[in-house]
Amino acid sequence: MANIKKNFLYSCFLTTANYIFPLLTFPYVSRILGATNFGLCNFIDGIIDYFVLFSMMGIGLLGIREIAFNKDNGKLSNTFFNLLILTGITTIVALIALVLAALFVPRLNEHIDLMSIGGCKLLFNFLLIEWFYKGIEDFKYITIRSIIVRSLYVACVFIFVKESTDYAIYYLLTVSMIVLNACVNIIHVKKYVKWNDFKFNVSIFIKPFFTLGIYLLLTSMYTTFNVAFLGFVGNDTQVGYYTTATKLYNILLAIYAAFTGVMMPRMSALVSEGKIQEFKGHIGKSMEFLFSVSIPLIIYVIILAPQIIRLIAGDGYIGAVMPMQIVMPLILIIGYEQILVVQTLMPLRADKIVLVNSAIGAVFGLVLNLLIVPVLFSVGSAMVWVMCEVLILFLSQIAVTKNSGIKFPVNLFFKNIICFVPLSLLFLGVNHVVSNFVLQIVINGCLMVIYAAVIHILFFKDGICYEFVSNTLRKIWIQK
Image (cartoon, rainbow, N blue to C red):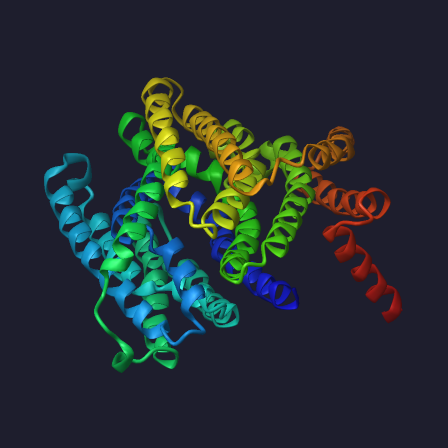
């Protein structure tokens, strides 16, 4: 458990840095570029991300699982190189498809400069190999490297992005982070793998690679696809609203995703060792951690959404407030879904179940996108995303209960709801008394932390968050 806590801290720094550093530049960039040019960059990046999904397929999930499974049995190098070659083949195919799309799709051809920059992102994602370092649980290296690269990115944005016409420079800097990280990673990997241990045999990975890849592609029908589809049926400004609305959500979910990323290789190892009770124990702690953190955050952001949007993006993004309020429950929904899928079904190698569930969600998402988004635009995209994730969560819970006996913790969920709902009254009271919107954000944020700490001390005395709060307070008391 000590290693999990240590890796979780590193992973928290890593995943949060991936969003916090861009957030440092976001208020500046959103104001300099404006909603239209900022939305254009996000539209093109959404298109590129789709090609990245095709090129990477299931390597992000499969790579972590297989590297974690083989890191101690002498097959690490062979596993790595076969997975890398398989990914290289799909990357070449995706790159050819991207070139054809940029040449023959008018909406994309008119922004051929941005598409060319995005092509570098597609190519270097192949060499990023984050899945390898997560599989061997070298989170310290990932964290240090990422923070250095992100710091360079922030400095370059403030130096080189000066006016609204610099949107191509902004996108180039964003893609450059992928390129630099990939170059460092592929050089550093020589420390762990050797070519002379390699025997070509990609066939054993083809089925799970494409099965998990199709799962991610289907999932994208109500996540990544929303941005691309909104760009075609709406306009760049609506894309700017939607991506701004989801910016803070992505940062908050990233903190929990850091925990999930640490847990997946550990859960795979427990399954391979037959330690099922310990496996279920970790699942329970994951659920407890999610409920304790996500519920107060959801309440906070929904009530403070107008102030938060005004702070991070400016008055020109008022259209992002309602989409932000709609997507915020996804912190809880997707967080719990990750427990079911990433921490439970995938370590149990229930890939077929995951694929079927995602197929159902994709069809549902595609139909909703076609019906709702052309009418409600950014608000419709937010609604579609939430409804699809609720369906996937429901289907995943049925599968998990059937395969492992783990049920939804109803009592724990409602205990958290009852304890944290009064927070909304505190937030509304502060907003009524305090007129400055920045002070409203700060004061309510402090209230949320204090209130959560008190609740865990009084009502969750056997929980993981209670242990963290009590240990922190004990250390502060000892230092005094």
